[in-house]
Image 1 (cartoon, one colour):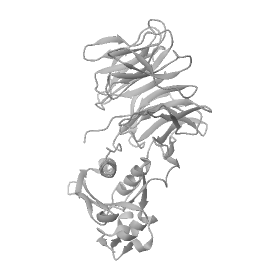
Image 2 (spheres, helix red, strand yellow):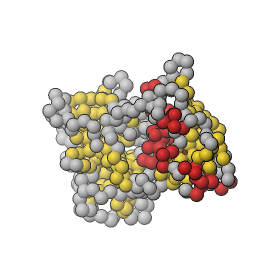
Image 3 (cartoon, one colour):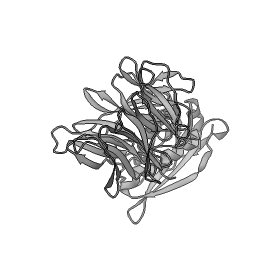
Image 4 (cartoon, rainbow, N blue to C red):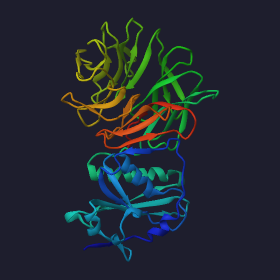
Length: 432
């Protein structure tokens, strides 16, 4: 039996944190007991801390769909004795790692977050998996510091970057408001909600630039659809497309050089892209059927889109050099809104099956249903490929929901304010 001395009084640290409020509340509906087990101990502190760092880490790891965190309160008594951790007892519970640390106040009012990750199983039992690391943050930055610990823990245990410091964009419709349509951004977990645009007319389909600084979206503020690019920090925007007819579904290429969208200026809806470097508009498809919903592949040279050229809406892919389109989905009566899963050959789609549901299309063409709801739309995949955020109807209102790309973890994200939420867009990974 091997022991490691716990850093400080755990029970004291649990009493010295205060809560916070999120615009979106995450209500878990499935998958909580199916992931790899990790233990997240309370971070030691000797002063009042405005943020419960360990709770944020635990929630992050759980929402990834890959982990089932065990908190201090869930552990049996034999795990601790005389301020020591019984790693053998943790191993018998199936845990594979322990996250511990402390939050220490600095003289200037900031905090120093120190964290450690220990192995539990086999030869790693009780050993540091990485050297102790620290992050400095003021009170307002403590949530981001906790997300950073989650990101690094996730990457160390999975080999894949964490996406807990990412942001999402979405559209809120607030009943009776002077400007009922509002484009918002927030942390992925609903905290730090920030308004980008308020309008009396609909706002649709926001999409992030790869530099995390701009949003492209559709606005009906002049009673006709137009595509705008907006700097979310300087609140400056540029009109990108306002042709007669349809201007819809903008999508920013991963390399930042192009924006694809759907236009009907020449008749039927077709796929176009705008070259931001050369300031040139290019037509991609030229078909008598409706082509819409373009979305970029990781190479910034492939566009996935929805087309009726086969009779019913299905997913196609086109290479920008050859301009030859090939059908991607063959199973299912209807497939829409293709979104590549980063780091894989799979796609997320909306498929019609007892309504409209989020599904994964694998490289063999097989479709795997991820949700059981019937009015799903607007999927957006986390930049590390682990989760999907989408719009659905929950308790009679349009809202957001999460599902892991393996289908194990599921959660609803009802708003804490009145109104409906739609058109979610997951932002890119921040710089390391």
